[in-house]
Image 1 (tube, helix red, strand yellow):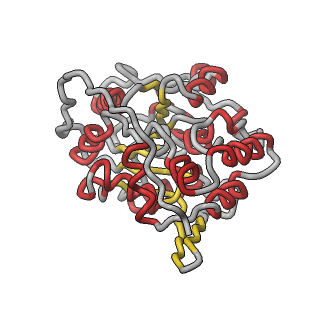
Image 2: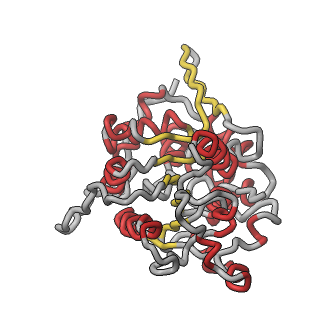
Amino acid sequence: MPIAITPPAVEPKQARPAFQRANTANMGTKRKIICFSDFDGTIFMQDTGHALFDNFGCGPEKRKVLAHQLESGERSFREVSDELYASLDVPFEDCFEVMKTALDIDPDFQDFHEFCVNNSIPFNVISAGLKPVLRKVLDHFIGEEMSKHIEIVANDAKVTESDDGNKWEAVWRHECELGHDKARSINEYKATARMESENGTVPMIIFIGDGVSDLPAAREADVLFARRGLKLEDYCVEHGIDYIPFDTFADIQKEVIKIAKVDQQRTLGKGLPSNFNPRANMWRRVSSRAAIPVFAALSPAKEEKAFLWPETFTKPATVPNHLDTGLAVAAPVA
């Protein structure tokens, strides 16, 4: 049976400077948008898995060994994760006391989420983590009433409690090395949305992330936001991938408002975002019968030079996972 573990000491958080709260009211546009966001390192600054494994499982040293095996390609993300979850021996409800002090939420996420709710913008978490854990964390940090508006697309979990201890198992969403193919999940949403639409349209897809393992999902999006200073931004800069950097979700809200007004401008090209992904945008019809597709405004020469994702998204089998936050996830990009 596990011994009682005292949550690690955490230095008191410094109060944020006074600021004017973001306007979360309805912005009055008809642009159809949906947001997909990574969880660890994006909505929260730390990794929920690390908090679990370091305090209730194999510990930080063993986790680093497993991360190295993952990074070297010796083992897959799914294999390493199975071992990490197998090391946990704690009742499901008991592990969250540590997370209350170990995790920090983006300071402007709650305002952005309220903005999404008020503007009927679906917000989805898409993660390689465990759905019950992520839901519990969101319930605590933003409250159950607001948390219920967020759809979590992640792996499930099976926790069995007995006299011999507590057994944790990941119930993987997909049969692949990652356990969850984020790109596949987004494409499943696209297919469903297209069938449910009266004219075959789907919303503009926005993806928000921080690490290289987010690339498979990012390439399926129309607009990519990358947390400033982290590995997803580094990769985008290195490979010439267009993106919008952000420090907090307040930056994302400002850009989403700009993007949402594009379709309401009569002259295409005036204020046209340069951060669209034509590869993702080309397959879908525009969200208004009267609108002109963004890519239609570009000449062939310009289109070729526009925001086209490089071959590195689809050719390599893996991306160096040490570039990501979390479990140093090795991310197939095919």
